[in-house]
Image (cartoon, rainbow, N blue to C red; front, side):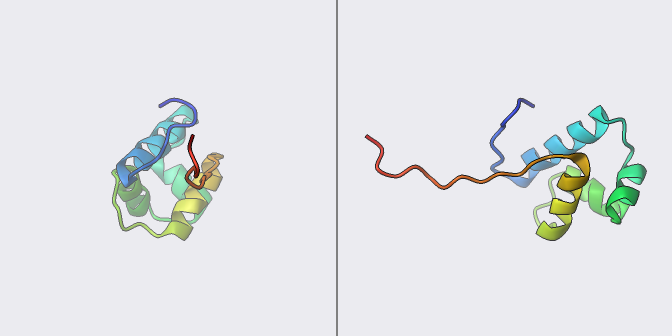
Length: 78
């Protein structure tokens, strides 16, 4: 995944999380311990489950050092 990849669905976010976790040589078990979350939750998140709690997703992103940004749509395009 390239830097600044737009995230438009849960599957894309899950792939980013999995890729980052593996680049950091973390197992699901280790990341679960760092976040205080279950391995099952992390597995479901990485597999694109759409009903994951935003609060828990943000914990995972923070633990991995992933910065989540959002931009409003551009208005008044020429």
